[in-house]
Image (cartoon, rainbow, N blue to C red; front, side):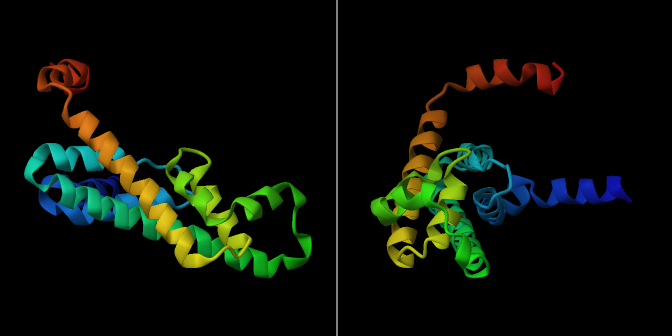
Length: 164
């Protein structure tokens, strides 16, 4: 039963069959507070479809930004639930405002930044704009850089995994 479920999940996320929808879901989920990276999926899709570089970057950016918006709304809801326990060590975030969400692309701290922005009830659409800018630049830069790595290097790197 568990093996069947795992196999179906792997098949569902297979890039050649499901492509951009897989990239979108992976980017969305990785932007939530779950520890998951979407860059391998974005790179894999771009490597298989180099003519769709900008499309995959756009899909990943939208998915990741929507995930950041979920974090924001979770923070907003947490603020409503615990309004009386406002913490002073995050007051500096209020001073920096939505621009701080540019850094939502950073590992470890990026997703919690989105949640804290919601907690602080920072202005929603400016937060979304700064999130999208940071995440879009991350996907563009990282995917472009990985695509410039010669194929021979990837073959050598993946040889132990492929069992050759």
